[in-house]
Image (cartoon, one colour):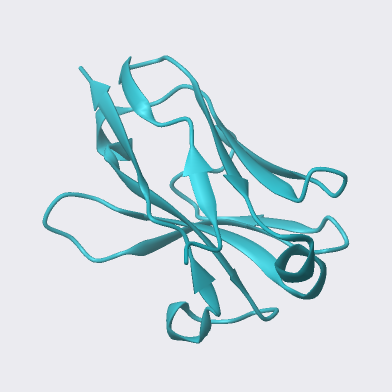
Length: 120
């Protein structure tokens, strides 16, 4: 049973924008912090962004100033607005839910992933 459902990936030209969404259940959304990870082709999964239940955010250096993470408590959904996209942002993007300051191994739930491809 898929607990986190991502959407919004696709193909975009460099400099363009995409908005990813991750919907989950109220139970999961209420007790977990929310994370975005990505896995570029041939590479390991890496941290992208985090948003706490209180709205605090953190970003990987590679996306600071270009990506924005937000959440809608009414919709039990977290968003990742990606602007000024670069070819090196090409990856499968995953939503995850887990404890505060958790490493990748401690995530409680993962989405199925959504492909983002940025053409040059």
